[in-house]
Image (cartoon, rainbow, N blue to C red; front, top):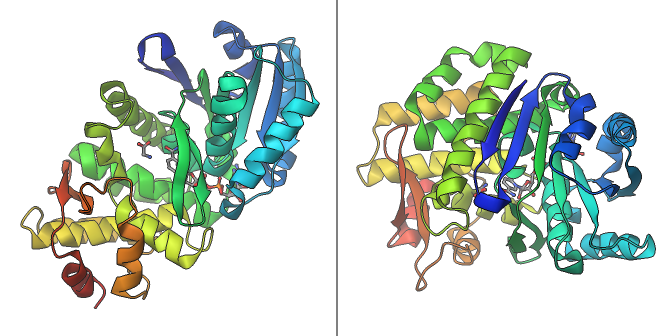
Length: 358
Ligand code: NAD
Ligand code: GLY
């Protein structure tokens, strides 16, 4: 079992990572003075698999536990589902001295986190991420929120959890496509920040594809450590945190245009990272060999690398609503080789998209 601390002053919190760590959740929550009355927010898929063991450890630590089930799927990451969560909390007389526990992937985590950030102006919450993507990315760093029909995650808040509890065993039940989707975010950390980690991923790809617990624990630890370092330096994304968005500007366009849930978040990021690498190459920031290594590693895990055939106007319309747009200019994170990245304003994006899509 490993522990990483996200150091944010009074908002600091531990991330516990390991094999079969779920039973230690209750005592870990006692260590952070988490409230006694709690609601687990989950969906039917994850709830059926893991709710019982989470309830057991919470009950053993003396907690009064209830469960709120939300429908499964990105298309339900909406204000409407959020309103249903508030309704239940009010019905069950939740006050400021109660807490929420997000049990599930990034959809549940983002939504439960936003419910916690906003209910009664903020109640404490915990993340128990059960997808690889949520274990290496969305459960850490405090971005919470829901989608708007016009774009991904347009409504949200920065709100840090009190604790993150990661059991790699949960990944055994994860569908293959979801698992690969998480690997896209793991690969992202190597590209933006850590060339040795990228090489390690290349060298251990077979074991990772087999979901070997030791390699997975290592990959999750390195990913969470990189994310913690970035967030500690730039919690509210005024600087370096923006680099975590490698592949996301192109990727969000793919996700939005395809319809929420059709192309998975990590799949869209995979396509977006290749579009970013090709853009970086055109502007002289990365070599053909770098692009080949990125495409090969993503493709090894069956991640898509070719952008879907929407029109340039379609891509532009979504990209122009991206949260990084400044003074009407689209800005995109580009890799500089492998192991470093920067934010760049892209001029003549329409012409460039035309080239990327042919
Ligand atoms: P998800 O939450 O939709 O989970 C994917 C599927 O796997 C769902 O059907 C879920 O029920 C199922 N599942 C979850 N755990 C399982 C398990 N252990 N076994 C079997 N099935 C399981 O998708 P995701 O990829 O985890 O998260 C994507 C979301 O995360 C997107 O909404 C994205 O915007 C968000 N995100 C947020 C941040 C952030 O910083 N907050 C970062 C990256 C992504
Ligand atoms: N997933 C990007 C971030 O947390 O900043």
